[in-house]
Length: 330
Image 1 (cartoon, helix red, strand yellow):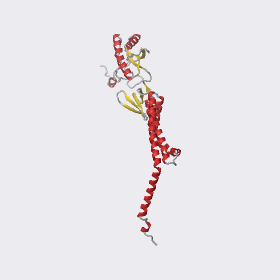
Image 2: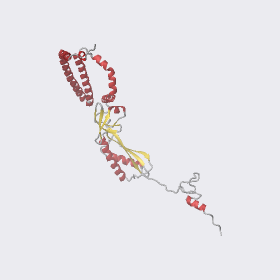
Image 3: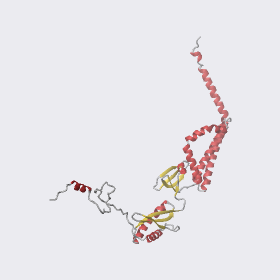
Image 4: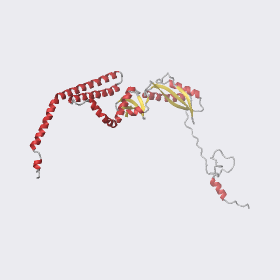
């Protein structure tokens, strides 16, 4: 006997009753959990306030020690730790069967995937934290890293911000700075600069060194201790080179300013002393390579010095003489 579709389909009134019963159960459960939800909200607000207070205290304490960047990073980290702890506590109040330990254990496998997905972010954050803790350089230090040179403006959780000397901003990931060599040019109060000066081979070397040392001493910004030096350094092709060395404040502006004063001071002093600063001298030999023995490496010469014997006329002239038959005497 066939069963009709009308008999198989539940009445609409029955479906509506089931939906109403389910909604009633939800409302009843929400009313039952309403005190717990209110307590959870209070807990979250309390922990939110505690997180702000903890962050502010950390920033204030480290700011007194001139560690503002470290305070920002650690303060933000502690704030999130407090907020997560408050969220777990509020979740256990709303759902009493939930245990934070089980939730953390369940996140074990997921944390591996999250770690791979945010590997670069975590690596830069950890590198930034280590840089702030160890302090190989500080804010306002002048550094050079990966071909970029400038003044450190701040160290953030992801990158270090550098302002170059020509006013550009460079954002360098903290992991690059932590794993590469960094030249901290303001690590010490003084920095040594140098410049090579060439004099003629016929000039008095000791007198030229003395003139250069006295010229360096006339520049006020050059440190008297250590004293400036002028050292014979190289026997070059066209000159004898003297290396002038002096110490100044390590800031870039002072180094450039003093160098701009040293060069004219040395130039004027050497001119006044009659010491030559020669140009590069080049000797060019122009000679004919089409001689009789051209191609014969045993006999060919390169044009200088002159041959003591044998023909030296051009090859074309020698070949023409050989091809012309001798005229018989008449």
